[in-house]
Length: 422
Image (cartoon, rainbow, N blue to C red; front, side, top):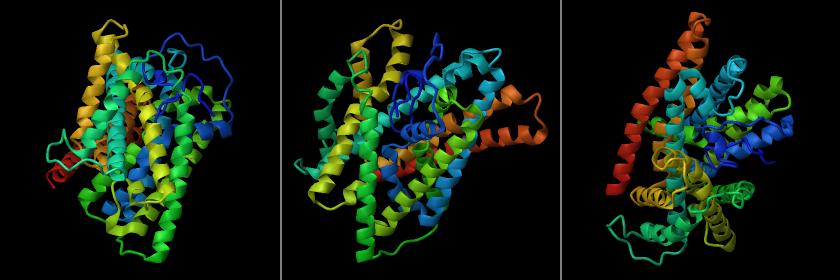
């Protein structure tokens, strides 16, 4: 169920990271995808480790509010994906080689459009890797509490596990080609689904034994927090144009995409709600750390850590493409890659909570990438011929995205600082 050389994921991992960035010269040749394969590829591209933070998010928003937010964000994300598809179809005659989000940005707003897309994609990729290191280090510190607690963020148990990982990550990120690492994307999804199955089984067992008190709706700050995590969980805007290009039946692509996004939303809602309903206020930022101490629990958590450890170099590859293009004449530069890996590692040391960081990334970068840019592109391409309701919908979507970015980022930063000082 691979995506060949054109698909990409931005919420969990990249099957091939190159399409997130400017791509020229491709002829699009290759076998086209059937509807079932397109459905599966959307699932592979969207579902990632962010799902493990949903139960904690529900403990903040309430189970009903969390479910509503997930369904609403899924619908809005699907709508924005289709805006990009509509823009490419309209510009196909004038710009026949639009192969990626960045290509579309260049076609609509020329250089500044591509720069905006590439900047947001690079920030999102680097942020996902920070989240990976937070997840791995917190999980390892939970499984193996061998280091003494420290008030120094650079010497905390989590930080010490990150320091231990960095030499290996420096080596992996020095690899010029990622061909050997690409098959791990399928393994990563298998591990993710296996972990979800184990967690759901444990949730039901815990809930049946002793149901904790839960609530349905939280306050406004919790809603903004939930929106950020939900946007992060569904962030897959970079893959929609490559997927649509290789779909065999393009007329039914929208239906297939919608069904896949709807299925993911229901699965996310079930996973988030059950995790919260099982543990109540004791729900942790990484739900797998709520599991018991048996071998299956440890195996699931270690499996997730291993797959994220090897996925990180794949996710960082688009960052290197842009950095080496801008700073080193498009030439391979090992020391620049090492500096970026160190920056990601240091960032992870200073963020204590996995889900808090998801909310920050979702509220800032992912909202701009997933909502503001698609609506802006659509308004530019179709604005002259749309009636006022159509123009108003695009304008409102841009304003909504900017408002969520400002207020969501603010509340997420407050939560991170609160967690750091606690």
